[in-house]
Image (cartoon, rainbow, N blue to C red; front, side):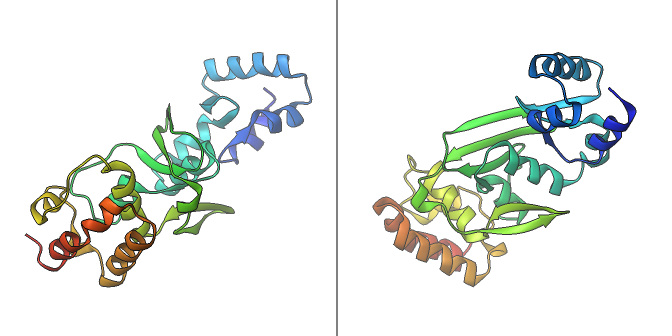
Length: 214
């Protein structure tokens, strides 16, 4: 790998195989062989097939949560950060989560690479809303609003759970005290408008747990 090319790549948070073909100006088979060699020698890290980053960039950014969130968005497009990851980030889950969780309109999948584990849960396109855009450098990162991360959590993760009591809600160990009243109201309204009948039945228990925490 030429020194100039390596330096150019070191400034990029990620790049595709196609972009690398343009930089290298060689045929795909030869490039694939080069990529394998560069990975073997530690120059490159494979994020998934066709998506890479230099080890230098990773060493500089591995503990930067904004960078990990950007990669979560790029591994599967479209997707937005949600579920356990956003709830823990905002102090709503007491138990640690070790993967970066997202939802997508595509099929459920998971990627594990040197940056960590990234999981994606399928959400119907009609429920693909309630997320915001934040910036990471010149890149956009999409993450759920707090009320929507909570809705996604109940909708996707707890569909097979009987939650029709305040006690059952409390066993989820959600820190309701870290959820402001506006977010909670939006959460309940989203359940009423977009949730299942089973979810709608637990709204009184959610309100009781929120207003009178254990």
